[in-house]
Image (cartoon, rainbow, N blue to C red; front, side, top):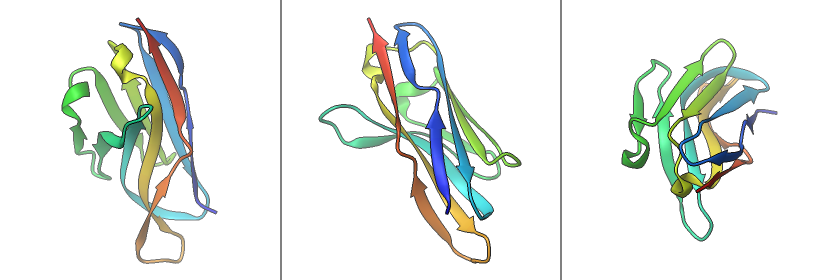
Length: 121
């Protein structure tokens, strides 16, 4: 079964850094776009950063210049380096990916279960 598992969340002080990792596992043929979303309490889930299989990146305006997304197409992982953290970055961060399962020709969208990031002021 294909699954995404996030790690690296936790508590950081304002101005600090955290690094999130998401690993895709299971019978995978290929992975198209990968990305990170976040959901703060009482708010909707929003895109934070995305990266295509070719390495093109896009970011939410609120994190540009502070967060960096990268991926390893061999290890099927996507990373989110978060610097200069702010209290408003506090949220549950979710990994998302469009994955083509082995033996299939179409992609399906998958979500991880999320990892909590808390930034104290």
